[in-house]
Length: 400
Image (cartoon, rainbow, N blue to C red):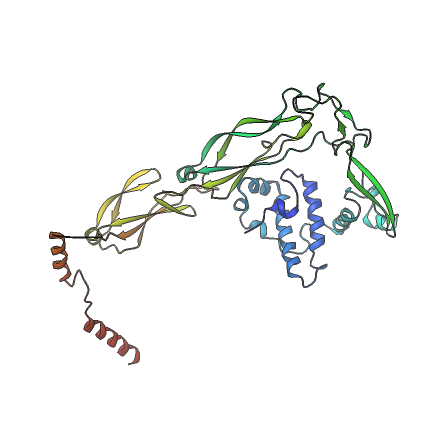
């Protein structure tokens, strides 16, 4: 089973393109075939990383993946997953990845020069510093499960749910402060990060870490709100509407951006991840976008043909059983299956015809069956002599 692409790259679902690219570069460099010759595990990791990056770096593919999981992007994600170096635009990208790994992850090169200037002109730099850390901490994603009937999956459905999650504190407006204001952190001066330089034989390296005073927020709260204790968030209940398209499968998930847990002190809310569960149907078995119904038919009706009421997801219809229908025959009812996930019609319903065999017969029914058994048109010859003759004749045909 494929791993989640965000998990592969080690980033959150709200990661921006820069974060995704940086994570990709680091992992691609780590598992690159040239760096790991004859290492099958590294080769598989490299393919997996490239496949994840191809999807998450593409806005359209990422949107479909966020909504439908791997089913939303199909096999297209693997088209370049195995090609060494996929995702590296040029040599600068590779050096940039090297800088990310050993330059403290600050991103960008000192002075905007080439990687060669960085290497031979005084070492690596941590990159340009952020003007200010974004307010608050990002809220966590919230995962819930949603059970669906086959009827709901066939057509698509809108669900209204009440969920419990972290919401912004109403008393302080989510700021965590009684006055609704926060002060600039004096340790990091609002950047949310602290830097420590060290010299090595390769040059100067800059290590960047979250500010220990403000936790990377760039701001500190002095007059804490007594309702949320300065966190800016409280447990609450909200109502959400979830539009489920037709054709989803058990295990697919929908991502509702920004509808997860609120971030502390004005931070961006996380995502709401809705994992879909298909409730087993009492009449139908699902096969992709098709459904299968098992129908038991009496022997006389199989021989002579008939019309029988059969259930569908939309109600009952008349189904014609042709004369001389054999057991396990599959009869198709066009367009009575599941709606296609990507649009363009519906699957079909198949009716598997089984012969009905009574557990017990008596009286006239038994006598009638005895009479029918005498007819070679109803019951084939099954005596031992005929059976042996049949085997002998077959053997004779083979060796003659």
